[in-house]
Length: 147
Length: 147
Length: 81
Length: 81
Image 1 (cartoon, each protein chain N blue to C red):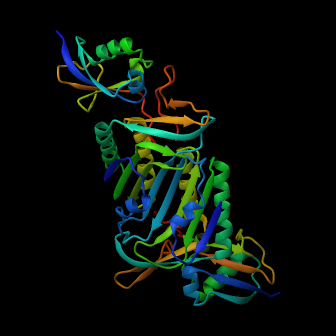
Image 2 (image 1 turned 120 degrees about the vertical axis):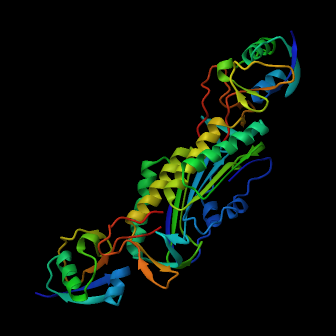
Image 3 (image 1 turned 45 degrees about the vertical axis):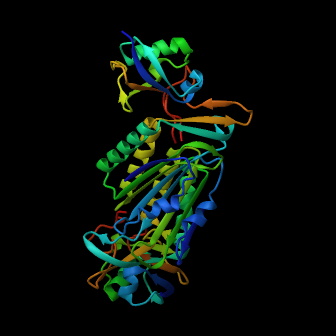
């Protein structure tokens, strides 16, 4: 069970091999990538800023909750910080379990909770030169952005 | 959108790169692997047998259904045939989408339907030398095995 | 009147029959009649309620009428994944 | 009586403040009082209802009393993933 913040490229292959377990019949992974459009605006790059000590604690709490709720064998989550460009991997979740239902449910739980609770912020850089902190418009809702 | 039956090792890295798309913010993959235990019995190896022409058609129908039901960008499923040993990848599903909900739901739909509908059979080889066709006990239920 | 059809067997049915396919001469009217005939002959353990039939590489109802030249396949409960 | 606390700012608050952390001398009793004081001073656009507070690297309620030596962090709505 491992939660990690990293300022360098996320490499799923190495991370997955740490979860290898011949008791596991199922492995679900989620990759969140920098996409070219957000709410109709062309995105060129983005920055993630983390409050590292608390992000680490909250991330570990989420993985513990998932392990307690679902019958899983292994669980991992890595989140990038710093500047990312189109197609870069921003967040990666993997769960192994004996049966598939648990791996699906636990991985969904982890990414939903990470997005809602871990103190990480995203600033988008748009093709017109402007930038914006997601969810931080003064009158906007405080909920997490989709996907 | 691609469904494939293969008698050689499934290699997710190559398959994933075919799904690369900078419009995709989310990618969910499911890996089904040969696990060491099934219903309390130690498994050494297994064989998958497919009715290839109909398995191909039914697999393609499932991917079409998933693409029609969920807003996805890319979708793929590969299923092994032949003899597999512990840890081998038996089935692989990947879905890319703009937002994460669709990728989770579509990948779950695909694997659930593949297990329930595609004419593929599994024979397990146990550590005591015995073998068994899964779901084919004469008095047993006809539903698919978990995981 | 007898007709000749190709029958394919998979998984446990293939093993119980001892071969993967064969030409069968039968007077069975429907796919179900043919399965019951073959089940009695070869002592298949699966009742038709646990088996599906495919006619010419497509799933079909058990009540499908069979004609000379048809290809039938009897499919035990599937277990992919 | 004034106390001195460390305040950390993140994301849009960091940019609006123009720095990531500072020592603040304040007579605010609670975390909320301190945020409102700083918000007025630096024209933060986010009301406290859209911000969370962390006290000594742990989420805390806005009514937390603050003491000299505390480290507070003001957290805009998160957007990981």
